[in-house]
Length: 70
Image 1 (cartoon, rainbow, N blue to C red):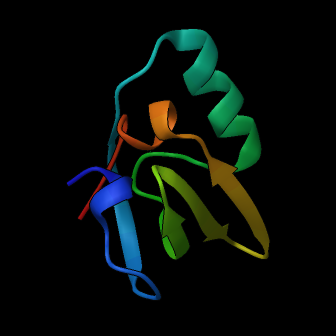
Image 2: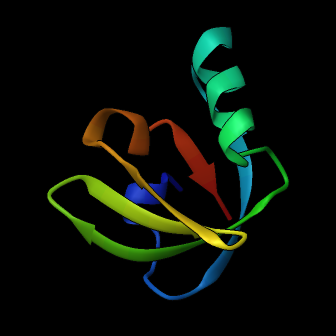
């Protein structure tokens, strides 16, 4: 499911990222990688705030539909 539809406060695994190579490389530099763990902290209007490792990151509505978790 896309991360925008994921339940809040539940640890999830990133299974797929649908984006061009430039965006994927940028996300990898931020710690967002396939098979990585991510926790959705809040979701509002398509914007998703997530916890990755010890940091937080916010995805806009466009990018939050391209990151799939299980």
